[in-house]
Image 1 (cartoon, rainbow, N blue to C red):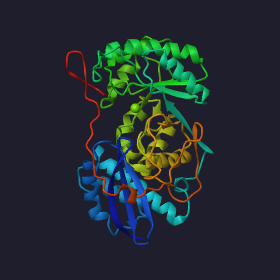
Image 2: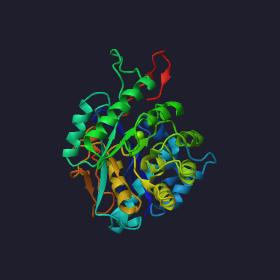
Image 3: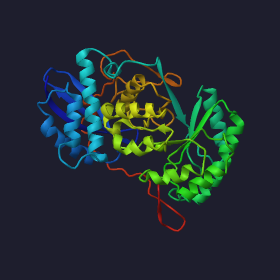
Image 4: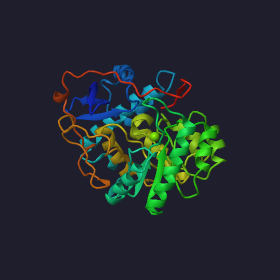
Amino acid sequence: MKITDIKSIHVWDDGKNLFILKIETDEGLYGWGEAGLSTRGLAIEGAVSHFREFLIGADPMKIGALWQHMYRSQYFEGGRILTAAISAIDIALHDIVGKKLGVPVYQLLGGAHRNFVPCFVTSEVPLQSPDVVSDTKRLVSNGWKVIRFVPGHPETGGDPLLFEPRESLHVTSQWLREVRETVGHEIVLGIDYHHRLSVAEAASFCQKMPDGTLDFLEEPIRAETPEAYESLGRMTRIPFAIGEEFSSKWAFLPYIERGLTNFARLDICNVGGFTEAMKVAGWCEAHYIDMMPHNPLGPVSTAANIHFAAAVSNYAWLEDRVNEFTFSDKLFPVQYKLEGTRYRVPSEPGLGVEFDEEANQGESFRFSERPHLHKNDGSLTNW
Ligand SMILES: [Mg+2]
């Protein structure tokens, strides 16, 4: 079997960019992939074009070897853009090989450990008013046992881009305490601070809540400096969930080996696809760290995550954005749908997801930017 074409496809669905990739072969089999690094699709397309030059004619069965060619071939290895492209290609290659052998992708990774994939849900109601308590009750009554929250902020005087970290952490910690008192201790509660705090601010945030309020704190600070997390870890006892931006096992290295994260927020569409994700998962297993993958993209990412979840022993929960996005059945006529609070483990060959190129005809990349937040003094702060 030979690769005959690799296509970058820009999709605009439900108000967001998706980067979908298709690999075609001379046997008529094809595979779907998806890349992370949302909103920078033109850069990923550029990287895919470079890889395409030497992947055309290659044997798609040699997934691991092709990964090495893509990652190491041009001396300047890795980086987020290249690895997002590698991720999409690696996922599509697994789809092809699964179809060729007539097995689901998780079978290529060692077979299924579980009968379904447990998920966590995110309450989109910010931690700043009684509304978050009623939303939490709604989620619990819908069966959710693991709930993640987004930070709150006092009234901004109509400025949607204003974010003052100190003001946020006061109101956010207050409503987290309320939520914990309301739901008791059987429900797992976490918060994603989206790396908006400094070490000192994050420490103050943690110290405003009694032990047991939070089960995980996701990315309170940026993750470029492991020593910063080491420092924060000395000032709190709340478990951390870190890693969605990491683009290789080497980025995970200090966080796993030095015990800086307690859940791995691996993103299969950023880290390097199944090939790299399985290596990170094995390494985490040796350190008793569970996987809690980042899954904010489209249906191909979700499909890849379901197979990864099936194949990994040390697994906590998959992120699901059921409240936030629904993806078009016209564009994705075959896609996984949440069943209650979990996904089924499939038995179909390959990934088990389909994209309709015809339905996307005429679409091209649309520019969009994440919010550029600022503080009261006008300076930029993290989104
Ligand atoms: Mg996050």
